[in-house]
Amino acid sequence: MDANNIISPENLVYAKPELMNDNHMHYCPGCSHGVVHKVIAEVIMEMGLQEKTIGIAPVGCAVFAYKYLDIDWQEAAHGRAPALATATKRLLPDKMVFTYQGDGDLAAIGTAETIHAANRGENIAIIFINNGIYGMTGGQMAPTTLKDMKTSTSPDGRNVKTMGNPLKILDMLALLDGVCLATRTSVHTAAAVKKTRRMIRLAFGNAMAGKGTSIVEIVSTCNAGWKMTPEDANDWMVEHMFPVYPMGDLKNV
Image (tube, rainbow, N blue to C red; front, side):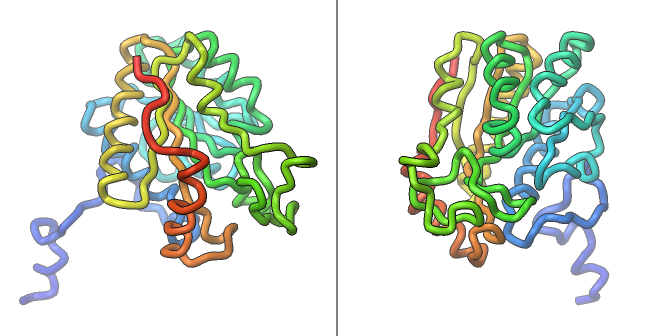
């Protein structure tokens, strides 16, 4: 068979979503961010929202999210994405506005913005990547770091007596009247990716329908920060992260 035919579009098992730019990704091999970016691109295209979507990019590993998805973006100061999304959606109510945030951005410096936007029921979607560590800045302990988990700032493991317990912020947000969807998924298997796609599509639909705030927490790996191979990181996540952050809907109005 001719080599050109092997790589021609009709012979591809899967084609890159048209909404994704041809930029080399800066993420570590095995990182969950790239998979989630692809899913978001697919959902936006499926819903026909290419010209109506505005993403709010974070600070952290996904700071360059705007390089990969060909939609309108705004860059928020660290943790302030929900506040910027609030202003954007109120000024442009016909747009689908979503934030893309890691655990440090959303659950540490941005805790106040996240809680108050959700409590007000702002008509935005929040995509929350939880890998339990600060991946970009050297592997420090995050609010979501597990008990006894070793990081560069908890080399002997997270001591809950002095460092507190892992912050289950999705559980907190699910209690707020302004939240219409609070769900937890992952992207470590094909089935998990399909579930995540459904939940992101639901969140985006909620935002367009004015139902309130939707939060999709995606429990993810950071094999570089965890100092594991991608395969081992997936196994470790299932064994250790999932019991603390179980999959499924906490709220789905």
